[in-house]
Length: 271
Image 1 (tube, rainbow, N blue to C red):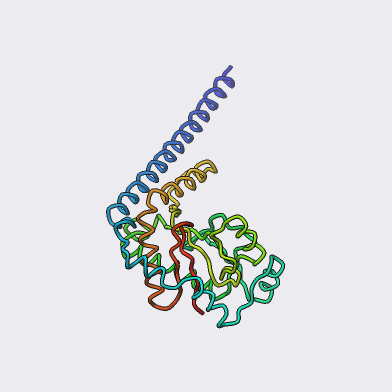
Image 2: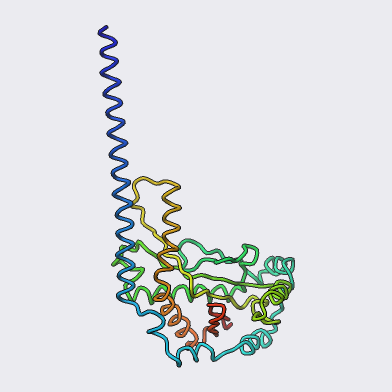
């Protein structure tokens, strides 16, 4: 009888301890989640209050400047340097093996990500990839100047812009032309020297490790929320992106074309 009573007391104690542990973990989890959403809301308010929306930032002069160098100017870069076109996927892989094209990996610490770009088309010429990274760095620098992506927010959030096109083989370009009459017959995308930045889409990455209880479900929520936050701030972030490209074009690092129909900037990096 005494043994049963002792066993009961021990089991009751263990159950109580386990429940207490679960409750504490759950409370910590809820507190962490609340902290995350409160931080992201404060971040959104800060951006809205401190960065002009694109419609207020833009001017006819700015948009004209981002249409200074048109398709023929971009193609002239390819012809002047005698770059060869990528004809198809096999040709792309061949040029990659020869080091004439390099794979672009949108690593977690970069300021860009791929938007509807197949993995087998995420290639650029080496100097073009360097140019993309320069845009990424300048974009980050301007955000830091405005105290976004900065210590003010404990470096918790990182804004990323969207790459909607990289190298397009001639075969791919012809197929695209058959579906979209706005697509040109000859494109600098086929030389690996250009990419498109979709200015209507952004992602706000949360780099915080303050979530005490990790779960796949919450990681999915953070990802969905990151796109939602980027969408909510897209008008402010386009003004930062536009300034980034203008600065680098004035420094003779690139040519950029504002394409309002496609909601993108067509960017060609200068060698």
